[in-house]
Image (cartoon, rainbow, N blue to C red):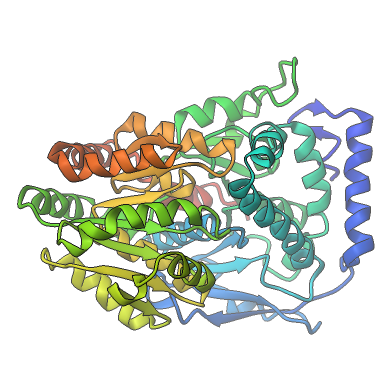
Length: 491
């Protein structure tokens, strides 16, 4: 089906359809069209998060000898479709896998950006590289950010015409699903795996939309869409302002579901214990633990350097503890160290030792007297992302841009966003009381750090709000997404 010409009953102008077709032809010319290929599919163990989350990897092989479908659990299997684009989509995928595992299902990890011989991965990789470059450049050039990056992320991705082009390009990604049983549910944490699955004829597709700002970018018509907030539900349902000056046909009622935040079972089930521990440490005047996490694009390094400079004396004086996860960006840590002389001599490096990182995070939960400056870096993408999840439980305040982490049940200090769409994550978090508003300058971020350090109730209030939010079911989104995938299953 051509999903570029008509989107939820809204007919696209001929010039939009022509532009979408031109985009697909451009990518075919660059990367080829492998739609006639018959890639075999293999299931392998995931050595990093397999034990914790029950995850098995789906691997698309370069050979063409079909698929042994008996390898899939046809009753309890669920595919978590994702791409690596930054860390956010991987993190949401881990939340879905965690919930599925807890509910007794088998999550199969399918990263469409990990099959290097396919047109699908080549196309995604090229677009990912462009996005990462833009993200980093936006942090270095105020002019580029103002004239290009903010408008693209805020208004460009919002346009329904953007979805038309994406749908046409996604036709080139569908081949990787060819030999996967069509009745196995797919939960996609980025729109491309959802669109590709629909084009490939997968019958049970849930498209877990991450952003609180309604953007046509995220539509995969034919799937069930889920959102994390009621604000997002209203905007996505109405296709709000996705064609300037027009009131559009809305999404069908059964195409969109509010679920709440997509959060790992391990985090949701321990909310009370972790928040009570934060409150206890704060009342007992223990050092406040700040967790700084640098995203997959490696942006905002300069902001983190200033925050570290602001906190390092307090760390040395025993008033604060600092966790920094640079993900798989060792170069970012090297650049931070080169900017701050003697920093390496006061930091404990936890690099590429996954068992040691897990042990540290577990022991930190029960050691109120933990001190120091601890830096984490892992070459493996799963370890790089999941380290933040492990450290999150033991930290008091997460310092992050307002992206996917804006929805996590931990007190948060939001620094400047990367793209206008992210600001709505901070707004939502501030409204439900588990995070600050966006501190979009370094002086504002430093002032908020000082408030956490000097005023006891700032942290305690957020912890109490998080506990109340759990009672209200706000953090139950991952469970509901998985249940939705199976409850609406079509044979």
